[in-house]
Image 1 (cartoon, rainbow, N blue to C red):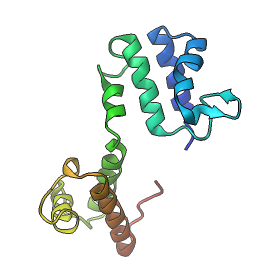
Image 2: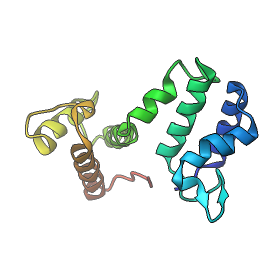
Image 3: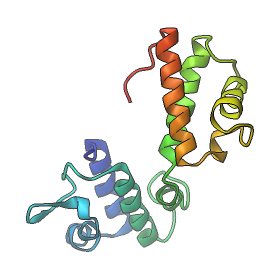
Length: 157
Protein backbone atom coordinates (compact mmCIF):
# COMPACT_ATOMS: atom_id res chain seq x y z
CA UNK A 1 0.00 0.00 0.00
CA UNK A 2 1.46 3.34 -1.04
CA UNK A 3 1.82 6.20 1.41
CA UNK A 4 -1.17 8.51 1.44
CA UNK A 5 -0.80 12.15 0.44
CA UNK A 6 -1.13 13.06 4.12
CA UNK A 7 1.73 10.70 5.04
CA UNK A 8 3.95 12.15 2.29
CA UNK A 9 3.25 15.69 3.46
CA UNK A 10 3.88 14.73 7.09
CA UNK A 11 7.20 13.13 6.13
CA UNK A 12 8.33 16.31 4.37
CA UNK A 13 7.21 18.52 7.29
CA UNK A 14 8.96 16.22 9.78
CA UNK A 15 12.19 16.39 7.80
CA UNK A 16 12.05 20.18 7.73
CA UNK A 17 11.43 20.27 11.49
CA UNK A 18 14.38 17.93 12.06
CA UNK A 19 16.70 19.95 9.81
CA UNK A 20 16.90 17.24 7.14
CA UNK A 21 17.32 18.68 3.65
CA UNK A 22 15.45 17.37 0.61
CA UNK A 23 18.65 15.78 -0.67
CA UNK A 24 19.30 14.08 2.67
CA UNK A 25 15.68 12.87 2.82
CA UNK A 26 16.02 11.09 -0.50
CA UNK A 27 19.65 10.06 -0.33
CA UNK A 28 20.16 9.11 3.31
CA UNK A 29 16.74 7.98 4.39
CA UNK A 30 14.66 6.67 1.51
CA UNK A 31 17.66 4.86 0.00
CA UNK A 32 17.48 2.51 3.01
CA UNK A 33 13.90 1.49 2.24
CA UNK A 34 13.83 -1.10 -0.53
CA UNK A 35 10.14 -0.37 -1.08
CA UNK A 36 11.04 3.24 -2.01
CA UNK A 37 12.96 2.03 -5.06
CA UNK A 38 10.84 2.33 -8.17
CA UNK A 39 12.90 1.37 -11.18
CA UNK A 40 15.98 3.60 -11.11
CA UNK A 41 14.29 6.24 -8.94
CA UNK A 42 14.11 6.49 -5.15
CA UNK A 43 10.82 8.11 -4.23
CA UNK A 44 8.26 8.49 -1.45
CA UNK A 45 5.56 8.01 -4.09
CA UNK A 46 6.48 4.37 -4.69
CA UNK A 47 3.34 2.22 -4.48
CA UNK A 48 5.28 -0.44 -2.56
CA UNK A 49 5.92 1.74 0.52
CA UNK A 50 4.02 0.41 3.57
CA UNK A 51 2.70 1.92 6.78
CA UNK A 52 5.54 0.19 8.62
CA UNK A 53 7.99 1.94 6.25
CA UNK A 54 6.32 5.24 7.12
CA UNK A 55 6.66 4.63 10.87
CA UNK A 56 10.33 3.69 10.44
CA UNK A 57 10.96 6.76 8.26
CA UNK A 58 9.36 9.03 10.85
CA UNK A 59 11.39 7.34 13.61
CA UNK A 60 14.59 8.25 11.76
CA UNK A 61 13.42 11.87 11.44
CA UNK A 62 12.49 11.86 15.14
CA UNK A 63 15.93 10.58 16.18
CA UNK A 64 17.56 13.22 13.98
CA UNK A 65 15.46 15.92 15.66
CA UNK A 66 16.73 14.62 19.03
CA UNK A 67 13.36 15.17 20.66
CA UNK A 68 9.65 15.45 20.01
CA UNK A 69 8.78 15.92 16.35
CA UNK A 70 6.00 18.28 15.27
CA UNK A 71 2.92 17.73 17.45
CA UNK A 72 3.82 14.15 18.50
CA UNK A 73 5.02 13.19 21.97
CA UNK A 74 8.65 12.24 22.58
CA UNK A 75 9.59 8.84 21.09
CA UNK A 76 6.14 8.46 19.51
CA UNK A 77 7.45 7.32 16.12
CA UNK A 78 10.27 5.23 17.54
CA UNK A 79 7.72 3.34 19.62
CA UNK A 80 5.37 2.99 16.63
CA UNK A 81 8.15 1.61 14.44
CA UNK A 82 9.15 -0.92 17.08
CA UNK A 83 5.55 -2.03 17.60
CA UNK A 84 4.53 -3.73 14.37
CA UNK A 85 1.32 -5.08 15.92
CA UNK A 86 -0.10 -1.64 16.74
CA UNK A 87 -2.28 -1.48 13.63
CA UNK A 88 -3.69 -4.96 14.23
CA UNK A 89 -4.59 -4.10 17.84
CA UNK A 90 -6.23 -0.87 16.67
CA UNK A 91 -8.21 -2.72 14.00
CA UNK A 92 -9.41 -5.36 16.48
CA UNK A 93 -10.53 -2.69 18.96
CA UNK A 94 -12.31 -0.75 16.22
CA UNK A 95 -14.20 -3.88 15.13
CA UNK A 96 -15.18 -4.59 18.74
CA UNK A 97 -16.40 -0.98 19.15
CA UNK A 98 -18.63 -1.29 16.07
CA UNK A 99 -20.08 -4.56 17.39
CA UNK A 100 -20.60 -3.03 20.84
CA UNK A 101 -22.39 -0.02 19.31
CA UNK A 102 -24.67 -2.41 17.40
CA UNK A 103 -25.47 -4.28 20.63
CA UNK A 104 -23.85 -7.50 19.39
CA UNK A 105 -20.97 -7.50 21.89
CA UNK A 106 -21.16 -6.67 25.60
CA UNK A 107 -20.17 -3.06 26.27
CA UNK A 108 -17.16 -1.65 28.08
CA UNK A 109 -14.72 -4.17 26.68
CA UNK A 110 -16.37 -7.05 28.56
CA UNK A 111 -17.53 -8.74 25.35
CA UNK A 112 -14.13 -8.35 23.73
CA UNK A 113 -12.35 -9.77 26.78
CA UNK A 114 -14.71 -12.76 26.81
CA UNK A 115 -14.23 -13.30 23.09
CA UNK A 116 -10.45 -13.29 23.49
CA UNK A 117 -10.52 -15.65 26.49
CA UNK A 118 -12.99 -18.17 25.08
CA UNK A 119 -12.48 -18.07 21.31
CA UNK A 120 -8.91 -16.94 20.73
CA UNK A 121 -6.56 -17.70 23.61
CA UNK A 122 -8.19 -20.59 25.45
CA UNK A 123 -8.18 -18.63 28.72
CA UNK A 124 -4.56 -17.50 28.49
CA UNK A 125 -5.30 -13.87 27.55
CA UNK A 126 -8.15 -11.40 27.88
CA UNK A 127 -6.82 -8.23 26.20
CA UNK A 128 -5.56 -7.38 22.73
CA UNK A 129 -2.21 -6.34 24.25
CA UNK A 130 -1.60 -9.94 25.34
CA UNK A 131 -2.10 -11.41 21.87
CA UNK A 132 0.63 -12.16 19.36
CA UNK A 133 0.27 -11.75 15.59
CA UNK A 134 -1.63 -15.01 15.09
CA UNK A 135 -3.95 -14.33 18.01
CA UNK A 136 -4.75 -10.83 16.69
CA UNK A 137 -5.37 -12.20 13.23
CA UNK A 138 -7.72 -14.88 14.62
CA UNK A 139 -9.54 -12.21 16.65
CA UNK A 140 -9.98 -9.88 13.69
CA UNK A 141 -11.18 -12.62 11.35
CA UNK A 142 -13.55 -13.95 14.00
CA UNK A 143 -15.04 -10.53 14.75
CA UNK A 144 -15.45 -9.80 11.05
CA UNK A 145 -17.24 -13.12 10.46
CA UNK A 146 -19.45 -12.58 13.51
CA UNK A 147 -20.31 -9.08 12.31
CA UNK A 148 -21.32 -10.44 8.88
CA UNK A 149 -23.44 -13.18 10.49
CA UNK A 150 -25.20 -10.59 12.64
CA UNK A 151 -25.73 -8.19 9.71
CA UNK A 152 -23.53 -5.47 11.20
CA UNK A 153 -21.94 -3.13 8.64
CA UNK A 154 -18.29 -3.12 9.67
CA UNK A 155 -16.90 -1.13 6.78
CA UNK A 156 -13.85 -1.74 4.65
CA UNK A 157 -10.38 -2.00 6.14
